[in-house]
Image (cartoon, rainbow, N blue to C red; front, side, top):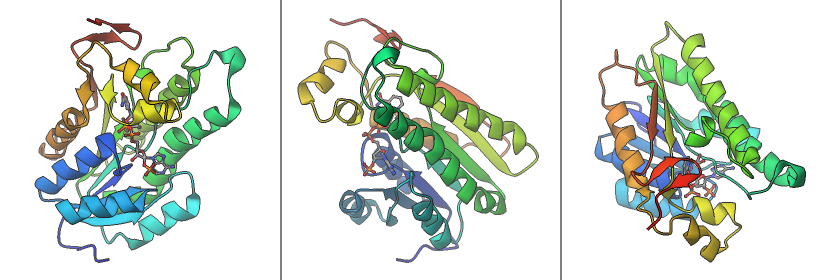
Length: 247
Ligand SMILES: NC(=O)c1ccc[n+]([C@@H]2O[C@H](COP(=O)([O-])OP(=O)(O)OC[C@H]3O[C@@H](n4cnc5c(N)ncnc54)[C@H](OP(=O)(O)O)[C@@H]3O)[C@@H](O)[C@H]2O)c1
């Protein structure tokens, strides 16, 4: 594996599927050497065989895995904190602690670990960019969704805090908060139940992964003095987390 030190490097976590995969494609098109990272290495290898870049196995819940990622990167110009997701839908009184742990470990502590590990290199680049994919669940609560909404709120607070703490350093912070995007997200949330996952998008025209990836590409191509702080993006058919126009 060779990661060039003369080409800007973009690290995309969760690049084996959905928003992360589409983002890897867009950033590669823009000339970045993309480091595509996730647990399913076979998918990443197929992706980099198409777009170039480097496939790296990464589990954001594992400190050693994150340390190993940081160690092989000669430079980092862009970090997309995208790895994450939801598990289950349950009222607080029936909350499953394993599901909560999965959501907090992946979305919150995963973002913390990867950002901490790569920030020194992002700053050294002289023009670093951290994009964190939170959600409209970072702005709203909804019944049965507290495990996910609380994790996304916490992930967003972590990201927004960095915007202030790193003020004066050459690194920008952009939070992107999507509404419904049709990816493997609902399949993961409902443990592979395809009918239940499909029902989430029934009767609406949801966003697709490329819609979010193109926004990330736009953010990454702004001049270095421009910091897009927060971008909330929903399908036209969605007014809030629980309010859809279903036909
Ligand atoms: N789809 C939506 O409606 C929606 C809306 C708002 C926000 N989001 C957020 O967007 C992000 C991307 O989700 P998506 O919609 O593209 O879903 P997705 O298709 O399920 O993709 C999730 C990605 O996260 C990776 N991932 C999960 N656990 C990981 C771990 N421990 N270590 C490394 N990578 C891990 C997965 O890769 P591996 O399984 O190969 O590790 C996969 O590549 C998530 O943060 C999600 O919360 C999604």
